[in-house]
Length: 145
Image (cartoon, rainbow, N blue to C red; front, side, top):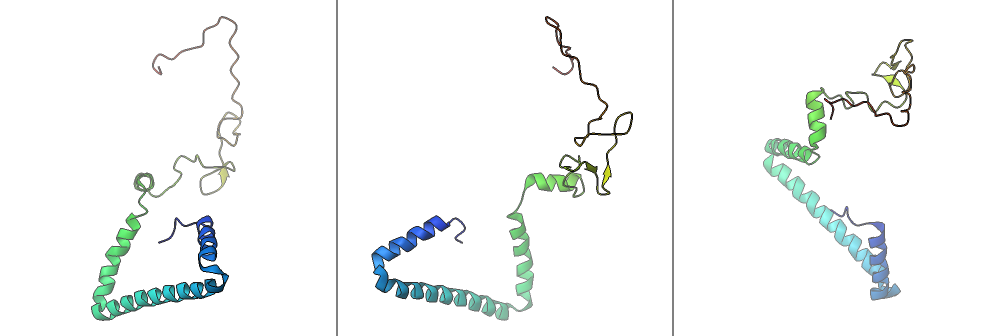
């Protein structure tokens, strides 16, 4: 209900209340606010209990679809597509692999001629391309452009 109210706003309300009500009436006002919040909470709990008593087992049947709708509130299309296409695997390509292990078994990935690999997955034996000489044109793949 008050997710957007931060500590700064609460501090401003308290300081404004201190100036408006004064230090003599501020404790009474705080007690009144606490009592009012407690009454509202009791009314809500009482209404829920009364509804549950009157509806009986239908209340649980009504509650299930409402919980399903609440689950849609956290709907994330990217997560749904990932779960559907990759059977719930949140990292199907292993891109979030930080420590150099591959998969759930924790084995290190192997690439290259000698079987060693860098933590980023590239072969450790890959040679660095030679820099271009002055006036030399870089190689171009016509299919890639």
